[in-house]
Image (cartoon, rainbow, N blue to C red; front, side, top):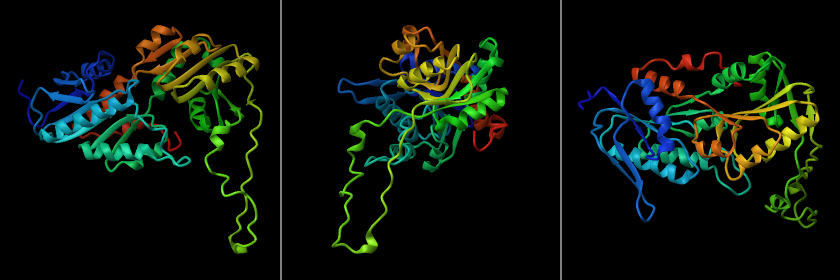
Length: 356
């Protein structure tokens, strides 16, 4: 098929059926064919990419969803981007709905900011632009040396609440921690609903404290210079878990960006049930749902978990009928179309404030 140099192609960076599903939905909305490529693992687990058509002078969009094997997915994206770069593609744009390692965006203990490292690797591989969705922290965009369009899934989740939750006017939006209060406030204001916040957490494990934060020992060194004595930071006293807001006789809707380990959500659901909520919903953009999450959800007081298709989770849905999926391929396809045509992206961010 002859494609003009001013055209664009859409490739999937993963050849598995689960990960190409979103790519096929996007290409169907765009009215184009999915690019011909093969991504596979050799016997020694090395990633190999074969691009089966010419991409010279074209704008290329690489769609990569992140399955459970995160590191393999990253290598697939890097190798494909570099293969397209060396094949003289004009622009290489990554469509990464769930950006991996986004929780490792701050220095903690003696760790590293892995998210910034990944941003540098993507730029080195040849990417010149990224389309993603609901970054864990908006400040992550500053790690990149090229443009990042951070789309929002909230319009689709808000639509689900209005259309699929009976008597949603009797609902209350819940933040499972004070850190999630801004996101919950945004949902509450758009739905004209009340807001509740769960405050208080379990104590840290002893292993988390053995990180050297108390060394050298907190004793006054009489031989040192008195000007070097620093005031000691007082330890936090975490209060018992309480719910700020009335949830009695209401539908409780917990909102978040990522749901992976579900122990905190199950504990929050139990507390909300004790306070009188009669239905518990969880709304999140990225449903990683690792390990035993489907089984734990099925056995819990949670009535429904609603996530988008930014991450493949078909296996988890088979294990737990409570998991529902919202399709966000429409906004991803529109972002691709606008970028290719040089149109403004402002329409996709209408009514979105800085705090959202």
